[in-house]
Image 1 (cartoon, rainbow, N blue to C red):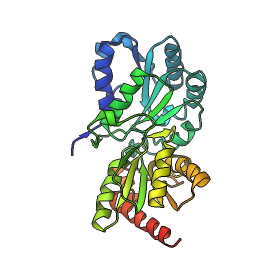
Image 2: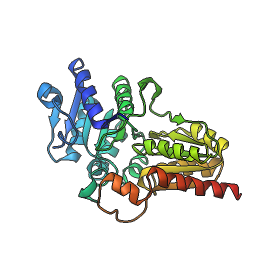
Image 3: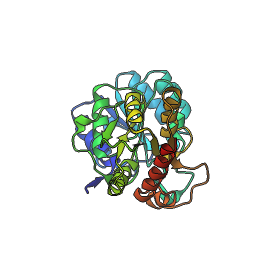
Image 4: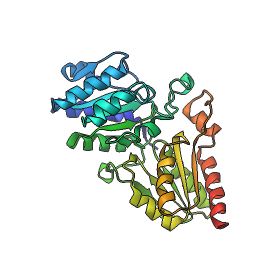
Length: 314
């Protein structure tokens, strides 16, 4: 299967768009290499701002430029933008209604061996609690391009978290993707897996494994964590009778928290929140960590089977 990093997809697209739109500005914090910005800084120096290792300043400067009508994308490590710069995101971007796209790269555990200081496993719980801030986790490069294109047409305060490494390309038609609207795969009624980011492809592989065991599941790519597509959640809850959420984030406050908050107040059904437990995460590649916590296709399939057994006991 074809793979491509979301950061590469963004960088290639924003360079081409910026050549014909002088209002597009990219702001960076000594991260042009890890952000895979490529030739953008050299080709468009007048539309590029290098802030150095100063994420707080970068967000505030971006907000100021957005206030003057610029289309600003500030990009750097998710672990720093979601913690060190959280006040600036809250006040200068969201509260002040400045249309800045804060792109957190190397999100989740994708910094690998750099360990807990560089993991961003609390970012979604924090960012989705900020009023007037959209939260997005694209699953692949096509989705990243679609989100970027939509933001160029109608800006908004938004936090976008993407991984570091190439991921399978699972979408091929950008028109299928809209911010705030989940994408559904399959129509199985035994269980629903609601997931986001690079774990979407693993959920699809798990669904294929379950199919061999005569278990039909629905997979929902909830790429927009806020605003949540509650219509989709309600539909799959009614059809499937149980939901497993799957995310590269702490089990507290992320996608699972968002889904369960809705479900418990509307139509309670058996749920399982799967992600990173509340503990120090071992150092390793993202794949090694996924395997360790059984967030691989085989582990996901087993978690679904256990959830279905819970449902059947009701």
